[in-house]
Length: 221
Image: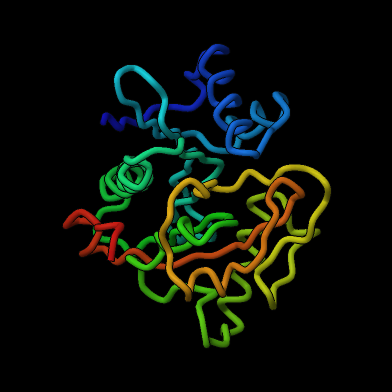
């Protein structure tokens, strides 16, 4: 398995087509123009491959929101197979690695749009995850949800009490991890039934502490 990251604007038409084919195979088709827009919104892409075949990808952004350093997970997909979990961990780990370089000695907010227990379960390695089971979010945490919804361009459909996006009939660019069996009952209950192909998703986030990033944050917990 090989995982590497690069500037998303460097993607060639044939590579974008390959990403689109993987998403279609997963059941999350995205129009070509929407994929192009995503490239503009998320400057990084991590790619997992084996034997010169694409096995997964994850768009990302390392940026500051209101001065707070953030890792934003964008559109992503993992091919089905025995190594699916390893590819998912590798993609997320690559963005953590780059964040440790970009934001040394700082705690970093990690956020994305989720529709499957396996992708939400990745947040278990973080602190103060929100939303989480049997927890009532604070006003500041709800405010973070609204900020993230604005950044993702979906605030008009966002419910800041449920941390959920309402359907709009178009595919939502989530981190699609339905090919990975992980998360357990807690993650499954929290995510519930979400249809990203209809525009539904859960916005969730957590904090990567500076020490954890510096030591190489472990995605599995």
